[in-house]
Image (cartoon, helix red, strand yellow):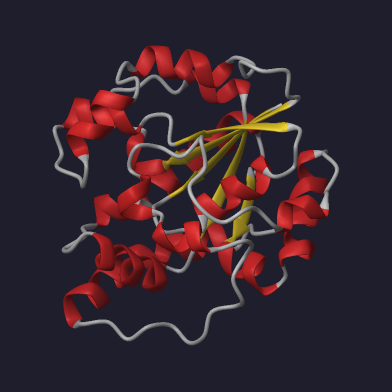
Length: 238
C-alpha cells in the first residue's frame, strides 16, 4: 500500500513520518516533490540550492516513483507530501495509485511555528488552500471524503489516534509507532538541518498543546484567511 499523507508545513508531518518508519514494515519518503517545486517555481526557501542539488527535481520521475512500490520489500510505502508542492503544472495522476490521507493542524499553530523558521509567511506558503483543493479532487474521484486526521487529536491521544488511522487504512496498529530514536534519520530530506531541530530532539509525540498562540495582527489576519479551509476538513477528522 502506498500512503500519501498530505499536509502543510509545521503540521506534525515529520513526527508522523518517523512513526510510520518505526513500524518496521514501512518505507518512507520525505517530501518527494520539494526539489521539483523549488526548481519549477524559483521560490526562495532556506537551503534551496542544497535541496535542488540533493534531490530529483523532475516531477514526472518523482510521480512515477510515488506510484510504484518502494525499492525494498516493505509492504507499506509512506510518503510525506507538502500540499504546496503540488503545483498545477505537476501531473497528479499518481495519486490514484495511493491511499491519500490529509493531516491538518489549526492555522494559528502552523503560522506561529512556521514564522519562527521563515519570516513573513503567506497563505500560499502554509498550504491550507492547496490542501482543500487536493481534498476536493480526491473526494471527487473516490465518491466520498478521503481520510483526515488532526495533529491535535494525535498529540492528545497518540495510541488512540494512530489506531483509528491504521484501522481506517486497513493495516495493523503497532505501538512501535509511538517511539523513535532521537537524532537525524537516513531518510530525512536535505532541508532537515533547518526545519527538524525539535523533532530530532524527540523520541515520540509531544504532550497536547496549550491555548492557541497570540499572534501579531498581520499573522492573525493570515490565520483568519486559512481558518475556513481548516474548519472544512476538520469536520471529516477521524
